[in-house]
Length: 378
Figure 1: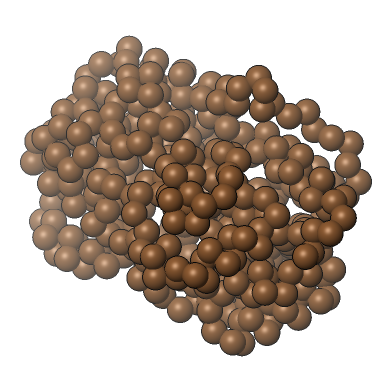
Figure 2: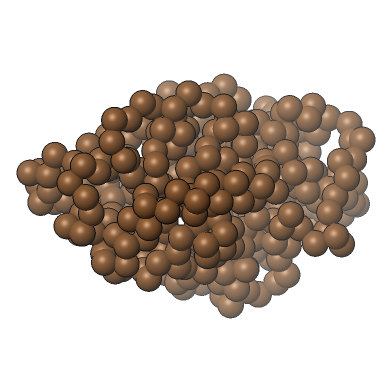
């Protein structure tokens, strides 16, 4: 278990709460933060609480229980593109939802992101808890400056998903943060029907941008067997360039954006899940999903990934940015079946320790005193 004895929480017999879960990023665009928001909301509902997710949506909401705040505006952030909604119409819809739903607590993810989180801090009609996800270097902390520090002071409790995320927030904003690692819905991945394969198959899932390292994985193909197959899911600013560069390689299948259900099925069907990121990972949630699905992992040796995957225990970790090392790690897993089996077994235990059900209990233990505390709306 990742929680020390002093931090373990027994679920409290709490009455049903009215919880507002706020995502600054479009809920119809796949992403790590969005996945955490939706998964945590489902886990809290399963425990008898009313949870409404509020956030931008580019199209119909992906599932029930969501209040869409309008389309997002793609904005450069932390080497990626953040689909946020800082526009006035989105804020008016958010304010109307706060008035209609009468939430007892608001849970803000990436709380300093411009948009509904800022509006929630200004209005503060209920206690606010913030979860910080970003790690490494983030220009948003520098650009937002005073506004970010002001929003942070309005929070009644602060959490971070990793030591790296806490360090980034403390460096720019100050304050104290409880580390609550991300969670996964273990059964959804463990029980998915695997996609059938006819050759050794590697699966990549992520945004096609420089920091996610897809270009490194594709460069590694020249060191990999001719009968290998590579599934590439997702899209991004590098998609067109990389597809053109590797269009002559029949080993590569470009899947585009895929549903959550297909993601689970691809993870179950692959022989290796590869995470070749070169920087900017605060927490390896997709690694935990792969562990739950029972697929061996080859990943870059980054601090964010090392939060959950230990070298040669739950994953083979390689030098970031090195196609040769990445290919060697993949070949090692293909050829050493005993290693692959041990990675899967250890990964299964690791995934169980990070279940979304456990995470929901820990957040409930933080929500309750904030709701009960007098004067929280100062």
